[in-house]
Structure formats: C-alpha cells, structure tokens
Length: 280
Image (tube, rainbow, N blue to C red; front, side):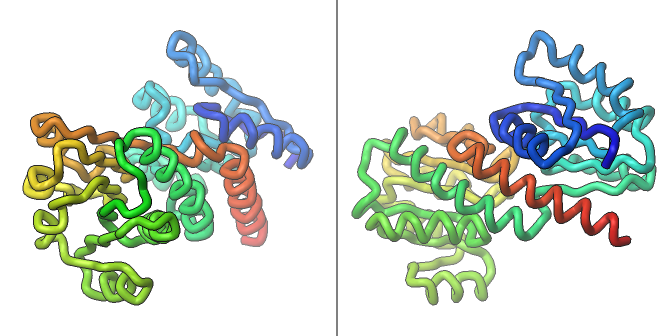
C-alpha cells in the first residue's frame, strides 16, 4: 500500500495498533476521538483524508464514535470504492451503506480468529472486574455464566481454575452437553431463577434479554452482575436497580485490560484481510 491508513483512536488498542502498523511500514494517519470537545472536528477531517486512504480502521464497537449520523454521511459521500473498511460491530445501516457502495469491509467481531483470541483477553478482564466489584472471593463462590460461546467458555474455564463453582445457563441442549463435558453444571434458562439462589456473581455473555427479572429477584442482594454482551446487554438493569443489586455493562474489556495484546490481534486480522483482498 502506498497511500494512507486512517485510524480512529477511541482507546489504547488503537494507539498500540498505530505503532505496530507504522513499524510494519504503513503510512498511518490517526484521528483521536477520545476528547468529546474535539470529536466533531476530528471526524470532519475524514472528508479530505478518505480521498487518499487505502484503508479506514474504525473503533470496536463502531458506536464508540458519538457522531454516528455524521460518520455515516461522510462514509456515504466520501469513501472511494477501493478503500478497505474495518471496524467492530457495524450497525445494520452501516453494513447496508458499505454493501450498497460495493466497499469491501471486515467486522472484527465476526472474524472467528479474532473472536477466539479476543475471548482470552475478555475473560481475564472479567476476572479483574469481578475482583474489583464483588464483595466475595472467586474461590468457592457460586457463579453463573450465561451463554457458552467463545467468551462464555473462556470465562467459565478461568473461573473454574480459580476454584469457583460455575453453573452455565444455555438455551441449546448441545451447548449444555458441551459445558457438562467440560466439567460444568449446565441448565436451561428456565431453571435460571432456581440456580440464581445463593449465587455471588453472574456473568452474562448473551446479547439478548436472558438475565430477566425472574432470575435477578432470586439473587442475593449483595450479588454482582457483570454483563459483557454487546449493547444493550442481556440484563434487565432496571430490575437490578430496583432490587439494589449492582449490575454493570462492561464493553471493550480487552481494550481496558490488555490493549497491546488486543492491538496485535487486530493487526493480524488486518494483515489476513488485506492478503485475502489482494488474492481476489
């Protein structure tokens, strides 16, 4: 690539990613959107920068950019067809925009390798959040993990290694069988209220309303709920507040707890994507 890579910085992942890509010889131009007072000015610069861009890398999730309508308008009017676009959790509107313009793009969060590698950093971030906010030790604590995808598996495994008594809640029978094979007690969400009794912590990984009022009302008042699913999460936060139970939606844990490792994960994904595009 002989032109520019435009990188929007929303957290330390992108700071490290810019360093890594620059060392690889790419011409990286950064737009820092972390300051709410200057974010519009930074996004406005995209209008002129995109004309010279081989690649545009947006945050994870893309919704970290506060001016979504402004961003979408600029992308629609200023993106050229040969600019590759990368980011995390594109909105439906953004996906349709890119596909309508025949612009090739990668959603980092739909890349299987990124998802698997990111799950490790996410799980370690979960441990840090639980230690920081729960009044209980993890060892010997009864902890519910909802969902058993990449993140659910990684979280459950690390909690088990720390001595927790982990219960996995999952809808699909085959997923529960896998969790049981891995050494966990697993149950359907229908048994969630029963399993919630005596649980010190609950970690949700499902981006759907699965941590319902029926489950929350059976939790002890000093339980801690950590929701790491994409916005708006899968927890009835209003019910948690009514019950006096702390419930946090914690997004971007890799960027918070392992930003440099996360940057290397993203850089490898960029290289794979660019290589694939060149082979087409």
